[in-house]
Structures are given as structure tokens and as C-alpha cells.
Amino acid sequence: MFDPLLNQLHRSIKIRGGEPQAIPNGLGECVAINGKSIIRSWLWKVPGFRRLRVTRLDGGENLQVLNSVAYPDYINEQPLMGIDLLWFGKTSKLVAVMDFQPLMQDQDYFDRYLYGLKSLRCRFPELSNDQIMRSFDPHQYFSPWLLFCRGGPEQVNGLLPEAFSAFLNCYWSLCEKATKRSSKLHPKEVKRLHIDYDKYSAERDPAHGLFKSYFGKKWSDRFLQEFLFPLSLGNQFSLSDEGNKNHEL
Ligand code: BLA
Image 1 (tube, protein in one colour):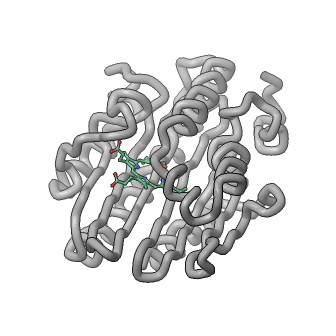
Image 2: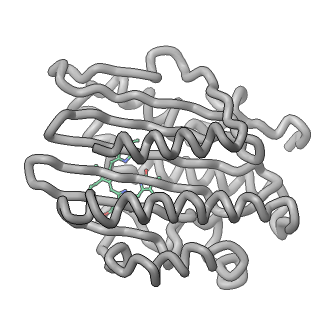
């Protein structure tokens, strides 16, 4: 269901010089305990980013997921790109979240980095519905203009592809301006915030329960800690993806 979007994301990563990276042993792909679903992930090294990961869960008609996070280099304080698209087939429910995930909740920071996203909110009012968050705190690592929709099949086929393209273009264009501006935060502080983001997300991510039921606890714990949020465990699994070889932090 989300394959055209996944292909679009991967095309745009390759255009920007993305190179595939190795994924920790056994985490790149896993077939569910019932044999009916498969989860597959990709890890990219893209110029300007220390880590960009993509995950697709294909649970047939029951569940489809596309999830991605892009972490800029520590010298760039700009927001992370966060995408979480879920389709629950039994109830025909779409949950679509796309955000420029801010490192801090500060008006000046918002003004510097979120104007593009803000304009997308006006362009796609259906993605502006102010949804209640059950697991996350909307004021921590989410922006006031995140694109968030709990919808149905109409949104999947109509609105979502258009909004997804616009969202990606908008985020990449923010990256293109990165060389022309300088970060106010020191790279060490950006690193601290990336660590905090991973820790916070690993604690709150509602995916964990879902993963456990599909792939078992052992695999799910590893996937969450070693692949989705490797900085949540300190640095022990993240030495290879720190990316900032020029910046000893
Ligand atoms: C919600 N994400 C969810 C839910 C699930 C997942 C099961 C709950 C669905 C619901 O509220 O009805 C699933 N998350 C996943 C899966 C992966 C994952 C399968 O990470 C696999 C890798 N989540 C993100 C990112 C963002 C994000 C990057 O991982 C930011 C754009 C947002 N997901 C997000 C939000 C919700 C959500 C805001 C609603 C949660 C809430 O209500 O608090």
C-alpha cells in the first residue's frame, strides 16, 4: 500500500548521494511468528546526515507500515525528519504522521526551521486535525505544525501521496539551505539532544507492543534498541553510525 511512497523516499535518498549501510545482524529483515508478515529495513548514509533509516512492515491486508527517521549531522541543529504511516486493514484506519521533529521547543528555533512545514499545514488542512496523542507528549520532539491524520481509505489514495511528496520536498529544501546558515547550538548539544530523542522515543514508541506480538520479545527489544533508537543505550551500538568523523565530540 505504501510502496509507491517507499520508492519515492528511496529515490530521493539516492538522488542526494545516499549509500546503503549494513544493518546489525538479523535486524534487516524478519518474518513474523505466524509467517504472514515481514518487516524490512534500510539504513542510509546520506551527505549531511549521520543516519537515515527506513522500515517497511508488510502485514498483508491487516497492517501496512512505513516508518523513517533522518538524523542530520551534529553540526546541523535542524529538526529530524520523522515519518510514521500506518494502515490497519481490519478497521480501514489510516494513521499518518509526518513531522520536522524539532530538537527544542523554542519560538526562535521554530521560526528558523519550521516555516516550510507551517505552509504545508495550510495547504493540507485534512492533515492539520489536532489529534490527541496517547503515547507521546506533543510538546516534546513534535512540532506545532506536524502533519497528523487519523483517517480512512479516501486519505490513503487521494491526499497522502500528494502530501508525502510535498513533505519530502520541503524537508530536502531545508537541508539544501543548511550550508548557508549556521547552527546556534554547539554540536555537542545537538548530540545530547539526539541521544535524548532516542531515549525518549525508545521509552514511548507504541510500536514495541506491536513488534512483540509479530516478531517476539527478543527480536523486538533488539530492533528497538539497536536499530530504531541506537543512542538510547548510550553509545555502545552506535559507533559505526556517528557519521561526524570530522567532528570529534
Ligand atoms: C502512533 N505508531 C503509532 C502507533 C503505532 C505505531 C502502532 C499507534 C497507532 C495509533 O495511535 O492508533 C507504530 N512506530 C510504529 C511502527 C514503527 C514505529 C510499526 O516507529 C516501526 C518502525 N512515530 C515515529 C516517528 C514519528 C511518530 C518517526 O516513529 C514522527 C513523525 C509519530 N506515531 C507517531 C505519533 C503517533 C504514532 C504522533 C500517535 C501516538 C499517540 O497517540 O501518542
